[in-house]
Length: 314
Ligand SMILES: O=C(O)CCC(=O)C(=O)O
Ligand SMILES: [Fe+2]
Image (tube, rainbow, N blue to C red; front, top):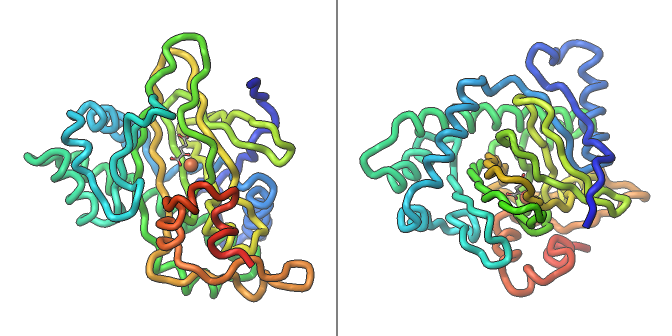
């Protein structure tokens, strides 16, 4: 299937030097973020919170992590399905990932590190904690901007403390030959928001509203894909739709990605009153993000055309 390079994702500069909460351009920028999410479900953020040194350390650590013996990697077992180790899947043989739960906390990173390196790996712990907190800060900036643009700051503030983060270092083996190969099946994410960061190999594709796949080109090392997931779609009463995306591998290089997934825990998500009116009647019942993720991995959830609507649609 041929992929087009158009359209391009909107690029929004969220570097600290370009963000001034007191300037008039702040409101314009908040609207820009909201409009990009409404149009594409995602956008490319330019963000200076991760230094070049930290970036290099994280991708080097990813290589070391995936080079560990399989019996070590499979020991990463967690309660939430597909947050642990995934690899050797017949449908997507190039794909491998490991999930680090509660990754913005010292305890979360330490318990994962102990599993992978029983004799310790302090630099992995320090860098992973620093990286995750830097990207969690980007999440807080994005969410603040969305909330400002919709006029739902108070609602967001009440939910903000319930955010937990999962880091999923992911590796795609190269397709080797000339044929393109599927790296990950088309899907929408089931969490609240997703932040993707990659090394130099492209491969992510988004399904545009016109039904065409387009490739995402990370133009610089400070580019992050900011993507709405299903729980965010329900929260915004469907004003933002979580985009369907996939990965296509071509060429001879392996691809490394760091996905940071924001989840809302122990909190019932419901659309703010401000997003409901006669043109936008309530679309989703209040729901729990983790229960929804668990539903998705049941036979009913995984075969549903729109699991979010099946789970909590009105
Ligand atoms: O590898 C990527 O760019 C996307 C990964 C992804 O979609 C996911 O982990 O949910
Ligand atoms: Fe995804």
